[in-house]
Image 1 (cartoon, rainbow, N blue to C red):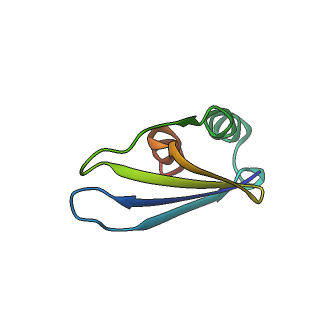
Image 2: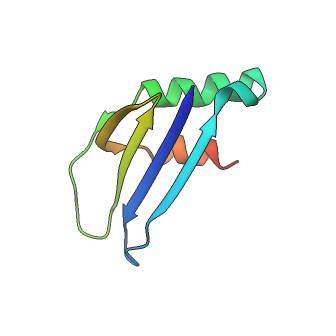
Image 3: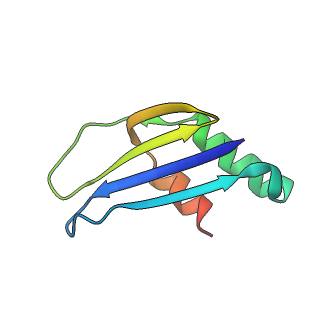
Length: 75
């Protein structure tokens, strides 16, 4: 599964992109990241909060809560 997360906003307004191909990861880590990606939930916006757009195998999910996904991807 190819996953790309674009994070924008926050206090500094800095944009960052995180990406991973779970096929290249150990199976336990890949399973955790894929589970988090499938469980994305919509979230409202608030001042100084991050905004996430996630692309999973070409399908885009905008305005989702992807904090746990980013954390798992960057460990």
